[in-house]
Each structure stands twice: as C-alpha cells, then as structure tokens.
Length: 539
Image (cartoon, rainbow, N blue to C red; front, side, top):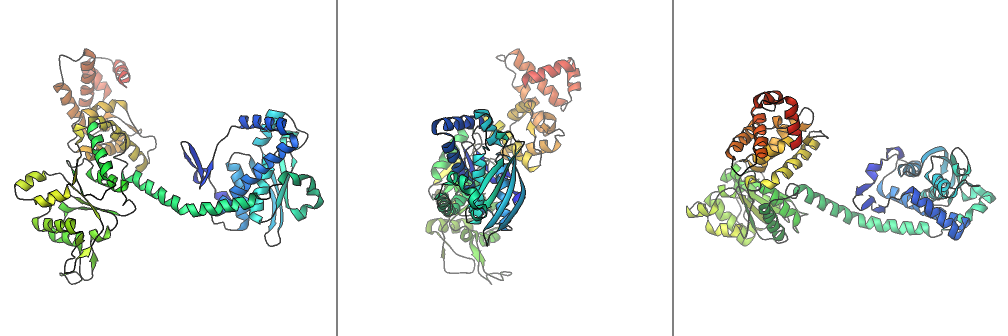
C-alpha cells in the first residue's frame, strides 16, 4: 500500500448518526465553533495551558491515526506508513500538507521532516477568534504530526512550527526531529507534549480493536446478506396483505419449523424464503434453492440426496446431495407440487426423521437443515385428487404463508417500480435513471398477470429504451399502455368528476398514440402547449 493511494470515501463509512474510520468513531465539528472554543479555553486557563491542551489533543489524534493505518493496511515500506500521516491530515480537511523533506532511519532512530501546511484550518480558527498572534499557533497540527511520527518511529518525535499564517506569514511550516537531534533547542517546547501514557493507551486500544474486528466483520457480513437477500421484500410495503405475509415470516423465522409459501408465479416466493433464512439463527449457513419441477424425478433424487459411486451408469464417484450441502442452513424446495408420489414419500421421511438415504446406499445419514417449500398449485385440491400426499402436506405447512398477487396489492406497485428503477440504474450504469410521473397511472392500472417478475422485466425494458434516462410511458411494454386504455373506459362512472374523466381520457389517447404528444393533441383537438400544461399539472 502507498500513501497516495488513500481515498477518503474508502477509509470512512458515513451513516446517519455515525461516521466510522475502520472501528474508530469520528465526529465532524464546525471550524467556527472550535474557534470560539479556542477563545474560551485561552480566556479560562491562559495561553500556555490552552496550547498544552490542544497540542496534547493533536498528539493523541496523530497516535490514533497511525495505529489505524497500521491496523488496516500493509504498507510497502515504513516510509509509506509515515507519509500516510500527512495524507490523512489532508484528507480530513485540516490543511493541504506538502512534505518538503524527509529523512528517517528506524534502526538508529534518526528522523527529520519538513512540512508546509497550506490553508491551515487551525490558523484560520485562531485568526477568527483571537486575531493575529505573536507566535505560531497551529498547536494541534504540530501535536498531530508529532504523535503520528512518534508512533511510526517507536520513539519521541517532536515537530516545531517555524512560520504561521496566524502570525502573519504566507504559509505555515514546521520541522520535525527526534529528541536527540533537537538537543537543547527543544527544551522550551517539551512542556506542551507532556502526555507520557498516550501512546501506551493507543496501543492498548489498538489491540482491543483488533480483537473486535473479526466479530464486527461477521456482523457486517450478516447484515449485508440480510439486506441483499431480503431487499425486495423489505422495500416500502404499503399493502396490508403483504404486511401480514411479512409479519408471519418474521415471527416464524427464528424457529426451525417447516414453512410452505404459496402464491402465483412471479409473486416473490423465493425472496420471502430468503428473508426467512436471513432472519433465522441459520443465517450464517447456506441457502440452497432447487426447482423441483425442472428436473425429472430420477435426477431430482440424486440432486437432493446424493448418490454412491456405482449406484447407476455414470455415477463414477460419490456425490453429496443438497440436503447435506445445506447442513446448518436452509434448503428451499420450489414448485413442490410438481414432484411424484415416490419422491413425496422420501421427502416425508426426511421431514419426520431428519435423515436422508443416498442413492445406492442402505445406511441413512442424519442432516441438520431447515426446509422451506413453495408452490403455485392448490395442494388441497391435489390431495383430494390423490396426486399429493396429505401427510406430507401437513408436514410441509406447519406454517403457511400466502404471497398475494400484485393485483391484490396495488399499493406496492409504485414502491416496487421505484426500487427496480434504482436496481437497473446501478446494474445498467445509468446513475440518473428515474421514473417520469406520467408512468405512474399506467403502472397502477395494469393487472400484472406476471406479478412482481413481470413488473421487474417491464422496468428493465423501459430502462434500456429510455434514451434520456427518464422512463416515460412510451418506453413501457405496449400491453401495459393498451391495458390501461381499456381499463380507463371500463371505469367510467357517474360518480366521477369531469376532471378525472378528462385526465384518464388524455392518458388513454396518449397511450394509443404510443407517447406521441403531437398526434395526441390533434386527436384531442387541443394545442400541443395545452396538452403539455395538462400533463405537467398531473405530474
């Protein structure tokens, strides 16, 4: 790692209420407020004591940054680690730091560095609060440079400011040396650095942070998986029906109880299954999904349970099935209603005894896995017709969650559409992609027979076809536009206002003209400018 490779956005994580530098919390402060603090400090304890306090503050700050830099990065050379100090000082907005000269010998402890602090924030604070000074006044900057270099060199390094903007100079400059190299010249400045236990405290804190790093990293991975796996389910939910489904999922998640998720194709059954997994105690384990309807029963058995070498033609080696692979985690059996009677019996044994039998073996193997199943079929009817085992159905649906189709949760269409617009803005590298307000009624009026999956595909199509990164009605699939026009005619009612009818008629004609506003205005018998004003008023 080289010092010049440091970037602020890669070092610091900004979140509401917290700014984090790899395990160390930071706080932004106002330069005006700190200027008043400096003034009060000088008035309360005197100039000498104020200088000592602020120098010690800077020294601790520099020590802490040096510790963070060695904790987080592996540096190409000790010099690069040292140069990261001025780089960090600049990234934090304290000043633009220019290193004029540096000589260091870690073996002998000899050290010399000359720096210039352009546009020093501390000098600006001092001038604002106390006016021009008779002496250099960048006390925190000298403390920081001294603390950072001392930590790197493992011995006392002291910086002394020679020129300062607060004292009328054009730029602030400082010279840093090891204590021996300074000699008697350092004596007047030593009292400002009386902080004997600072480095020891920083070292102890660094060790504590290292111990916590693995646990914090594990928690971050868990949270990231939760957000990624359940992102679609956890976007803004407005409909009561889907909120009920999420509530049941949340309450069932902590337990190993089997869950059956039902609903039409494309409603998001797998998304909900992942949400349950990520909310459970098994979140650190695998989530393995298999589409039971996509494989013939002979292949499905080997896929789920595994096989022994020689069990059938082509089985040249032992194979572990998904039930074993998902040990400690969750297996998701999608389209469970499509499996045959023989496989149903084997799954029943898995759920009853928590063990599987590999193809070609006679000794069962214990498994530790949670089973979540899903189907778009009516399993009660399948039981009545003799196509599905009733005892297996009871085992699968200890908890049953019905995911409502999108037409029953129209309140969620717009949040989902906006979510997908954000997804495709990132995926297609269209950072300014957005939905135009004229699309909203079309999206809400359409029946969405393909449910959430169809909505996702429609937004992706519109994103690709949006030449100016604005998703307008003409970019949506034609059936959505035409479907809205038919729906608008069918919703005529004597209880609706003239303004509502006019608004829907304009949208219907616009859809018929595939977004061509000039042609729409001609059919409506109004000028294009009038049409523009009416559409703008809706937005």
